[in-house]
Length: 378
Image (tube, rainbow, N blue to C red; front, side):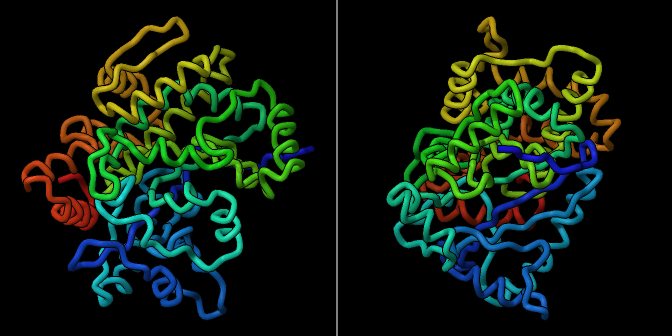
């Protein structure tokens, strides 16, 4: 099976941000995505260019175009949020994002009336219906297919950095799970979801995809739902590790970190240097540790099994990536990572609000809505 990789300008960036639609009064989820999509639909009957349908009727996804800088992508997202609010505000619907809704019941949610979603639910049943989760996806352009898998393996070594910084799903169905990111471990229950295989050659990826198609595991390669995956149609590496972020500042910080990592490794590859690579068993352990402990995770940093507190590792990484960020025009956005280190990740801020309100989770939703409107962590 031949899987061509589209031409893409190096280190261009695109962002996808999944947003929950919540009732302005109760804070619970509202099943009004189709109403919103109908209201913003172009007059020619086609799809809106930046507001997209998702699995559940409580969700819309907003996407950017292909952008040269993260700042340009941020302006794109901001415009789309403002367009959405012109529809949602009169409905008394707020926009909200976190890895999970703190108290909504998965059993009350309605699935979008579309065949591919019906097929997914029919196959995955209980686990598929549990997918009341939200994330951000960042695409970074890679100009050569030969570089995709080496860069993917290198970025995997920084999986726990991205997971810990973005972790924002401590609550599930009104309960504290004791995990920083419950979403990370839920999403991997779907077929082909979770950590990618660390293939050495593109032909290995093609053989895997051919096997999945032949045996009916997938109907299209877009159904390979890895946390980090090639996107051959777009010519990008797609980062899907992160929990949903409650505000634009964090979205752009995580996007800048992703873009800088890919560009950094692309530069090292061009120079003939060896890229980092962790054994799959260490990558798997890092995923669990960062999902469980978040910013307090002790992560495995190299193939020798050396360990370090993730926040210390992030500080060193920011110093290493500073020249790359300057070259990409992403210095200001990358500085948002230090804001997360200073103010706490999303899961920490949510738990702090719950503690101040005797464990009540309604105020947590209010805080998430406030951060969405403010565009920054509060």
